[in-house]
Image (cartoon, rainbow, N blue to C red; front, top):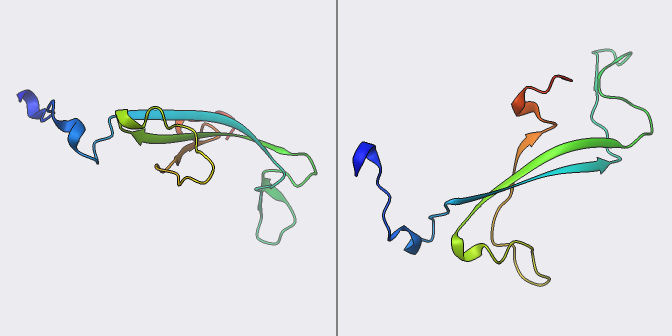
Length: 99
């Protein structure tokens, strides 16, 4: 155990050990709008209020065990075994130049 590394070959027996990260980035078209008005609602400061659909780039991530690699897609009538988190929205984490 050099430098505080406490990994073991027996870690795969632990149900909470999830070493694999799956990341999905998707372009989502949505009719829902997000826009910010000024205080007296006379001007839109961010976003738009037209009828065009919004396109957002959203990044989802989840951690899984090696035994879950074959169960990536949900099956009808079966519960979802993992939680997906939104980790980035419109590339904000990478300092999107448009914002």
